[in-house]
Structures are given as structure tokens and as C-alpha cells.
Length: 383
Image (cartoon, rainbow, N blue to C red; front, side, top):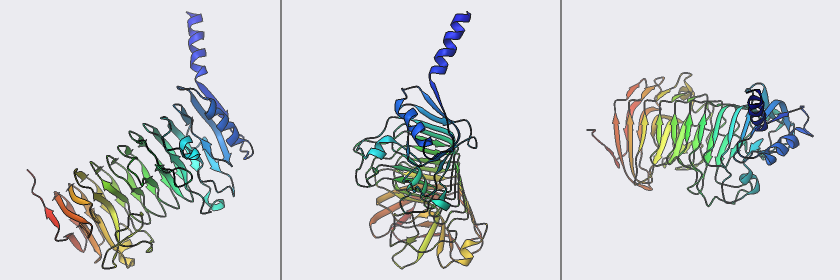
């Protein structure tokens, strides 16, 4: 029995590789990359201490990359290194047209050290280009770029995926003070779909809290977004998308006009009449499917809209692609009695055909207009 126990303990210890960082920019990233490049499937690379990162750490394939806690295991970008990313998938770093193998990132802190890394090169603290992956219990803060980016573009900015990047889960994150978006899906093709962003807190982003260039198949659920400069949650190309149970407060904070009509860049949306709009939750539907916005709370608490020349839509559709089908049900909107506030706003836009929206059971109070729609939008009756 004792021999069996010793053998079991030896087998268990063999699947864990512990890296103790020294806070030394000349060696920490090298130690981590050595561990991640040599791991075998089923191995956990465990990070201990504060690592000062002067070159991007590449995630292992089919291995876990974990810390012991968000405060006890920290990867901090070295002063003046202006890395494109602190931590990234291997295929992204090599600009390959396929995704990396599944990986798991957990129980870490990622410090972008934006005070000393504010160059335009910084893309994100964490860049994921892998399928069926998990990122959970991770604190991301002070990134000069995005907090977390999930992308179908390579490091070179031109190589695009020829494979799908699906079935991932992002859960229990705290993303704060990002210079760009807090959580960003970058997808000029149609690769990054069918994944979940759950149970997370995203605040103080220089752009949107959550910005999905491709929202197809995504579930964005039970997240708290507050104090983000642009939109709270903006999902483009919605197709079987679910946005439900989120709490969005104080979107459009201290923002300025940066984009053009019908923008999909994650900045403010400029309508054809030159009106600038910020959305608490926005979904841009595609044809041939339907999406749901339900049971969300969207509030203004600090009165941003009272001190802005922009207009604020708490929940809505900026425009559509083809014929959009959408349920907007059982949401709670509370404004600050701003004349530029619209609770529910539905627009087909010049490029769309029609919007069929079931807009029922919503409680909209203290806004300039409870609901506003254009003449291509049809309000549906439920069964």
C-alpha cells in the first residue's frame, strides 16, 4: 500500500512544473517560455511570485498555465518594453493561419504597467488565438491596449485564420483600466464564434467594456460593466447571440467623437444626421438567425448624459445586416431624465432591410424617450 501511494504521489508531481519568478526582466520570461515550450499534454505550468516580463510569454499547447492566486502570481510588463502582449497563444505570435491547441489560463494577475508602457505597439495584456480554451479567475489591469483580445488576426496584422476558433469560456475575470477595450473579439473573417463571457467585472476601459466584432454564437452573461468610456456591451454581427443578466452602469464616460457613420470600430456610433451615440448594450443582427437581449439592468448613475453633447441609448440596435430578428425582453433601464437619453432604440440603417423585434416586458424609467424606432422596424407580438 505504501509503495502504491508513493507511486501515485510521484505521478501527480510529474504533471506539475513550478516556475518561481525572481522579478528579473532578463530571466523571468525566458524561464516561463522554457517551461511552456517543453510541457506535454496534461501538464500544469504553475507560476509563483511576480514575474517582470520583457518578452511575450507564449501559452503552452494542451497544458494549463496557472498561478496560485491573482495576487500571488503576477506577470507584469517590464518598464519601457511596450510588448504587443504579456501573454499570448503561439500561433498568434507566429502569424499562422490556424489556431493553437486548447489551453487554460487561471488564477493570475496580468499587470500592463501602462504608466511605463504607453506606446502604440501595445495590443493587449492577454491575446488568445486557440479553440476550446478556458480563461478564468484572472485579474487584468493597466494595459495600454485592450485587456483581453480574442483574435483571428496574426501578430503581423495581416494573416487571418483559415480554421474556426470556437467553444471557449471566459469566466470570473476582473479587467480594469484598459487603454482600449476591456474584452475585445477581433475578427475580420468569421472565425471567432460560439464562446462564452461569463460572471466578470470590466471597468474603466478607454473604449468599450465588451466589444465583439463578431458576436455570432456568443453568450455574454452575468457580467458587471461600469465606468467604460464608450459602449458597455457592443456586439456586431449577432447571430444566435445571447446577452442576458448583465449589469451595465455609467457607459459613455468622458468620451469624444472618434468614428464615422455606422461605425463598427467600437467607438461612438455616428448616425447619418451626424448625431453621436453611445450604447449601454447594442446588438447588430444578421439575417437568417435571431438573437436575444434579456434580463439586463442598464443604468446611468453619475449623469454622464447630462454633461455630454452625445446621445445615449441604453439598449438597442444601431443598424442591421439584412433582415434582423431580435427579442428585447424583461430588461430594466433607469436613466437620469436626460433629454438625450433613449431607453430602447431600434434602427435598420441604410444597409439593412428590416428589423423584426419583440420588445416586451421592459421597465424603462427616467429617460427622455422610452422607445424610438425607425420606419423599417416592425414590433412583433409574442405568443
